[in-house]
Length: 502
Image (cartoon, rainbow, N blue to C red; front, side):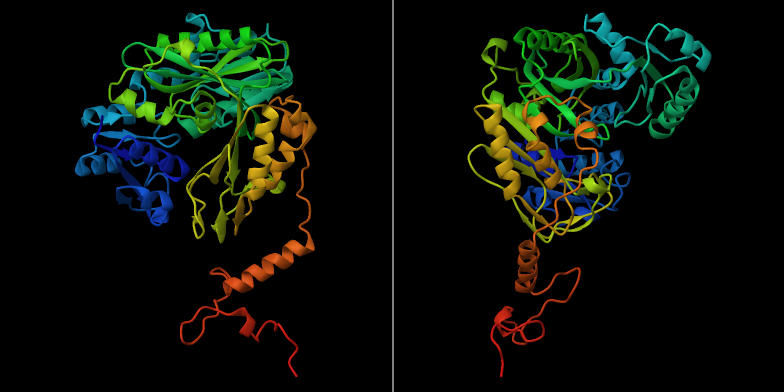
């Protein structure tokens, strides 16, 4: 086992990985930007080093600076978490060149699976069902339109590199095709430095289902069953669950799992990874892509299988063999994850920045919270606005949903706007309760969602809380007694009095 690991990430995933290191008896090293200097996960680490600056480019994407810190502090390995450098084959190669272990798959696997075109070809060779379509490499618009003439509209144009919906266009007729191809290629080039596109059949109603895999360096690859991630805004997931409600047939589950393992074996995969599929209305499934990293939603799989995926990533990178046999791994109960974002769903998910005046995390049986914030944490515009993940487990889906509603109602985040009311609206909506949630769920069911007005008593309570706190940092100066004693609202005369004065 390693003695010291550098965590090349921030926020809730940095905290999660630091805790995993501590459980394994490993010294955890945090790196942080100037904006994150006082972050709770930085304080949790055994050692911490600053990356001067605030932008992601200057800090968490600064490969040379991160490698220099790892070398100088004696870290034997780097865990990239997710996002940032987690699927960067060049960084994994650079780690190896410096004698540092990259906690993740090989650079070759990252590169192969990072290309939608290459991974699609490999999936087909491994016998994994793929979406009908054409690789657009080397084809002009006319040639490409001819090549896909056998596919009925609508069709999807998407960038081979990257993700997050960039370089993606849905085309509904011949008239739209040329313009959509040019726009997708231009956006892909600007976003990823690569104009390579694929053109595929577009399914108007699908479910997004992924299979978690774990592979070691001794040739064993296991699956940890599936997660459904169909509830998405702007092609990004906000609620995930396992088992997948769309899979009612265990034979389908086993076929998808076998396909995922087959693909992972084809690239000699070692580490945690996720093979993503779409499931159509008829129950057929097709390969979408493979994410060669730890997924945001990994906690729900941990809850239903009892396997610590983050810890096993570290163990595998250290050379340990997986001790499990596939038939020993079972799904038990049901788990959900809700991502809490600092954003306003009523304003097209506009990010909300500012200081978190008060934060209270939920607790109770079957409730887990992965977060990277405390009261006083600043939410900056420089990074992803996800604040926390609330995860619940129940014996049944209904129980897990009930616990999630309770947990979110307990969660307090004051000072910034969050999507908690939006999440609660989804959880209590009947279509979701019935498990009929395709990737069109949000635009179809909650297209013009607005939060319910806050009751007058809630505003009054907030005002009293503010007064008891003596004012906020961002607004008024706190009232402090001349002798330094704590603020006493009962003696306040500038705002209100508790008794009528004669």
